[in-house]
Image 1 (cartoon, rainbow, N blue to C red):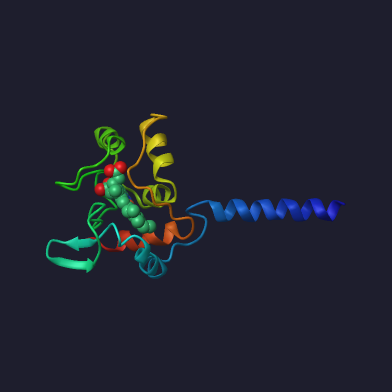
Image 2 (cartoon, helix red, strand yellow):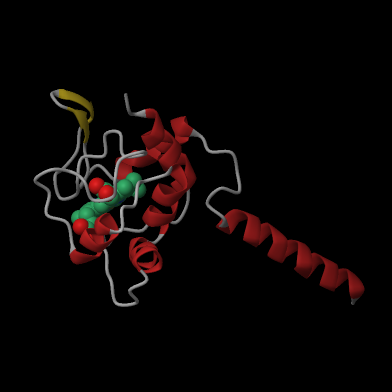
Length: 140
Ligand code: HEC
């Protein structure tokens, strides 16, 4: 009986460690591969220099870490992002990882508005910290 309890506790601890976005050392190379799942909607381009070819449904993610939230000129963000931008938020690597894991939950937490939504319907269940590390590496 006791052994079962110990094993259950260990299992829960392992699950908790996997759930945290910063639980493991982030791997930018793995994140670059995972970015294939983002490219239908996002490109990474510094002016004419295209680093990762992709779509325009979402904003260009060049230099996103360190950039204010919702700051791509000419992109029409949803209301939640307008609120986050007005609050003066700037993307950190941790925030990018949390956002792509659950965009609407992140917006709600940051704006304090329980009805706020993100227009990004995609959720990355695994490897968000790796993608965030990759994005942090594509900047000036
Ligand atoms: C189905 C299309 C789609 C996919 C796939 C997608 N996104 Fe998005 N993303 C969007 C849209 C649309 C927005 C703008 C959201 C809004 O205005 O509420 C956005 C916003 C963002 C932002 C905020 C940008 C800013 O300027 O503040 C980040 C960061 C982001 N996405 C990262 C990612 C990453 C990383 C992936 C892959 C793991 C990804 N997205 C996959 C559509 C997508």
